[in-house]
Length: 92
Image 1 (cartoon, rainbow, N blue to C red):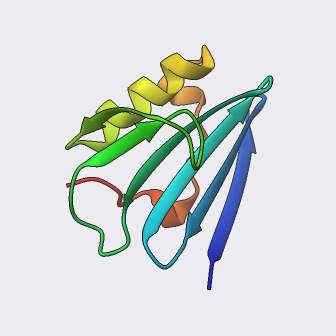
Image 2 (cartoon, rainbow, N blue to C red):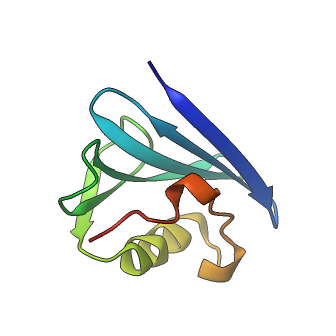
């Protein structure tokens, strides 16, 4: 089962999804993607990847640092990233 929620702003699309194993927040802009992923139990470090199933680039404890990296990958500013409400509690 997958639960999803979406948001968009500033030319950036965001898709939050919960799968059996992970919580994923994927941002898309101009053909580029960045995904922030966390285990389904909601603890452990956040992984920043090149997409939902992409290569892991870095791990972070804080959601703010993961968002900073995701924004950098998209060539955007952190305040421009639309974060669906269901994803607001990601991070440790």
